[in-house]
Length: 290
Image (cartoon, rainbow, N blue to C red; front, side, top):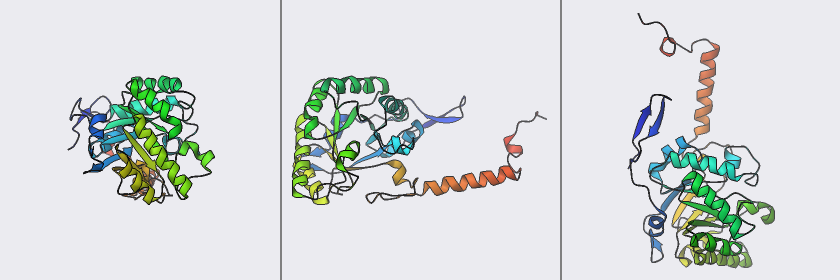
């Protein structure tokens, strides 16, 4: 399965054709888990731009416009400064660049925690202005009322429990969760609570593997792991981590490429050509036709 591209001669950039394939839906994602098991694991990656979405879309079931763009795109120290406007701008770009995957947009810190009404105002704006299929929000039992409120009003919600980056200050860092019996039980209760509240799926991040397996087996909705277990119903990674764009690779990431080295090498060769005046050549300049 692949996306067909046409050439937009006004911009000299590749743009997708209007409808090269049928887009997956939230109910289709839910139906992948049958009687507690998912035969073929769900594939999810982050995407922040239209071109990135074009390249990832044919291979994924879901594309997450994550608030991780704060660090990945904007160089911020955490996800906390990310705004709703930032999420909407990038969410709309990813929707424009994709035609197969379910596109989800993260609700940024401060846009949904105050009340279900605040969450609905923010989520409805995200859905209307991006065209995405669902939103994702962090939190377990504390978010039950909000998840129920949103889903009853037609906004599909993916929950996020375990290590929740927006709560990094309260958690005291990004270490794995669920090490103590008390925390293990609390995260298990969080997972059950969001599933019962109506979340169609949940991201389970940075937890001990035994807990990840227990949660995957213990809820009826798909569990998407990141730093969890291969037993989960699917996996998600930040695409830039998987592609090797950064020097530091988190423990739970497998590098499939070293794109940073490729980009740096190309820039080095370009700089050398410019400084030696070997670029541009006759092939790259405009001259009167003979």
